[in-house]
Length: 356
Image 1: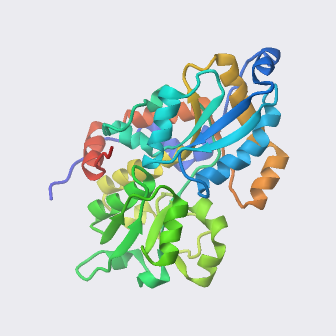
Image 2: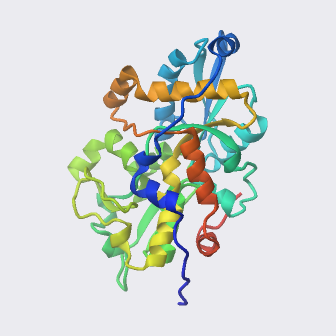
Image 3: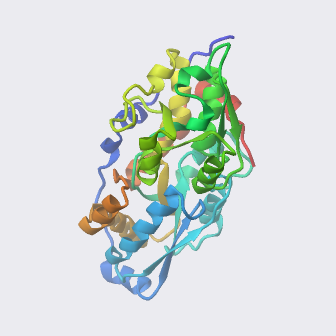
């Protein structure tokens, strides 16, 4: 097979990949408290979540919704609306094209949809560079999880002449789909990808019923929601899609990107296709045309919420990690990502085929 040499990763992207908290600095937003309060007083502010109830995106959003109103002038009532489909593309289309432009609707998307935009998915009717970003509550590292029933104990058992096969559930147009496709096509891992699930809660039901043998998920989400599965050995982690090993995995010898492959081209593909977009995996945003004062007030409210002791206490009780980044830092990561070197873009595009 002919090898394709890639350009270097943009500097900012490298820095944030290795130090996600490095992008957490934010400027204080300037806005007129009284004017903003007059608008939000007595109103309902909707958070439109691109996934069904019960999954990580929904859990984080409902926690944020319980606290955010206290920090918005006028103290509006917060409501969470689930708009699942196509890995949050449907919600993204709504926020970009149909949502109220007055600051009464906030979107919550999966950052991995940026790949679908980059590759020209005809179902994408938004531009990730043209949202007004508010916050990302947690930097996510995806891990590969398999059940005891799968009969697979190590990732190395999935490659080679006598490789076992893992059947993994996936959400279209998300890292849950992109990750196994890339591992299958770049490392020739014997992975069968069963796509079409609307959310991670549906995938877990399919795992529990034996319909599939595993899935990818952010460790920050699956660790607190299913500790007994790992403690009992019913679920195992086979791989972690990061350069920096996670410290709290069930085992200390779970391979990272650098250990899954020694090929630099494959490493870049895995970084751009999985770990990089998940720096903003749960991203909250507004339509770009929301009045600047209201957008500034909402960004400031997110920052206060994600640092609030009562919010953090509730997050700890729910075993949810909080490692936030904010507006301009998110936009810089997004624009750097969209400036991906053409050689990487073309190789990724061949591996991750756009879906409407």
